[in-house]
Image 1 (tube, rainbow, N blue to C red):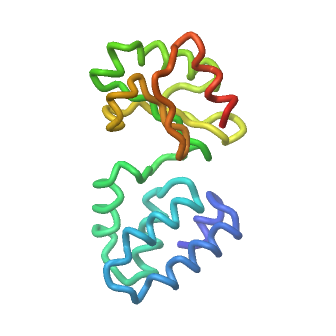
Image 2: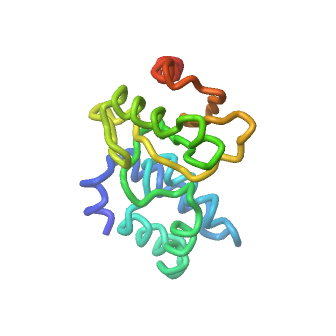
Image 3: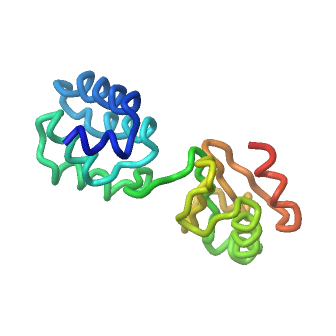
Length: 160
């Protein structure tokens, strides 16, 4: 199973995933943390990696899959190192988040769910980021940008 993962991920990434598995294997309730750390290394958790982690931690693959599919933090498809999340909730939508999304896709050069050629960015529409008072809102990586003027949205990419 590991050999097929080396075709998706580097040997260095897999060694780090192995270290995460080893560190959390015997710690009750540590699956969520282990998956978070694994995704930080690989940027996404495809099904074959989920099965590898499950086997390494001695738990059913269905349990790993259940956690990965329940939490929106996890992704089963490739993502950029910086994920651009554009809020399309009501407050953001009425303040032109659709235009913001279009401009960001053009600036980054990708469609929704795609990864830029350099692997740096991917872009996603999200329903709510919980910052309605700052609408329209975009999150890039760990940084939140609010009260965005759609005419100047490209500037936030240059700040990250």
